[in-house]
Image (cartoon, rainbow, N blue to C red; front, side, top):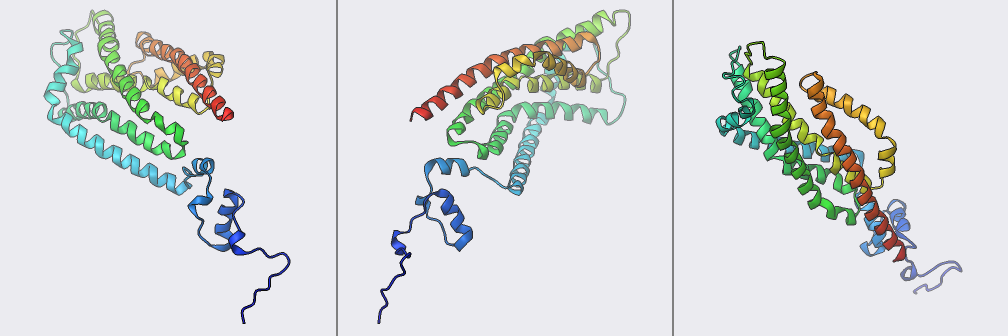
Length: 293
């Protein structure tokens, strides 16, 4: 005989519904029962969908680094194939100041070609490297923030290339003219190819990295981590930090070369304040629309 009796506080199973997404999440641990996708609300899905454990972050980082290294190797191979043409391009700023570059060790020739190939590979692989950076940070972003992927890639690539061109056409010629033709006017230059290409590659790659500052500030401002007021208030400390960083990454310790680094970095910092103000306004408007909805 079928028993239809129920206790006074019992509720039919078909009337049980999860009160919230938190209750649904708790049910996984309490009963082991699967949670229906319909039990999750859209805001909660946006909030929890990108969460990863520490080990998952490490695995993702390992994967992105591996992909980046593979891309860099492939583009460096292309640079190796074009090494003679790239050699002439990178040597052009030297002009006739030093008619002949020399080398002093047997392995120097391989080192020279490798530096040239890797420098070219970094510029060629720049969009893909930035894509790997974006794919690493994107799981922690809200869905509405992921639409900035293309602006991030385009602006990051454009600024990196712009920094390299700025170094090639302005900083390197001015530095060489000052160091060789003015300070070394009474001396006979005998410059090794390894030293020269190390000098050029460090400046070109380093300035390309420095030009990423507005992109970094834009996204930190978009996520509410920094504000234009904070950047302006700490401007003097930023200048001190810029001088220290320029002294570390600058290939020579002379004051003129240091100025060539500090000047653009300060201009980029001031530009970043404007960028931060723009993105803070966008964030404020987006939050206002959400509150209105």
